[in-house]
Length: 250
Image (cartoon, rainbow, N blue to C red; front, side, top):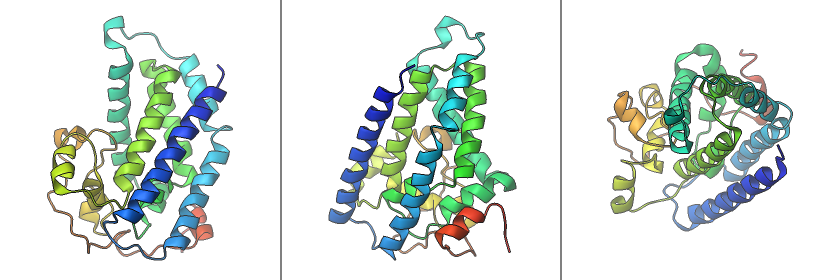
């Protein structure tokens, strides 16, 4: 499989989305961000590390699972839309597991330690979480026989969605309220990053908003712009400490 067209296309879509949201955040900010340049450096550095590792770990794992997948699913239970729904449901449960299982939370906490929220926060993940996610996703791909092309489309949709709902864009209520019934919006995901563990452990959906309603994990609280972001009782830290934190804690 020639991955160059996919990589080029994915990079073009994601970079364009990133630039657009960075501009919109500055034109229509929801809140004033703190230590913005320092945050951007940490978030983009963590993202850059994942980009470097992806061709050597994530991509081979995904290709291997797709190549040797099981073939038990009937024809009527396959298709792009069905597979995208399955992957979106899987990412919901994987996200929820990252909050419920202490070992997974060690890595996912790096994402939540960001004390502000903007489009760069969507790219701030520890490489350990990315590797673990690719391994678990490979099992899903193997068991459900999901094609690589569908996984590629889902990755783009998921990253665009994540950049949107992490963004610091002030949307009019008449747009965000109906939109939040279909997809995850900034105000909905804002609650997930509230530095109160009860809110942090809610609103797990990444694409479609329906999963939090079905599995009763939607926060009942309303967003206020003065809510502190981050992890309750833990402050954000320098880049090198973020990288080491899952492996060592004082």
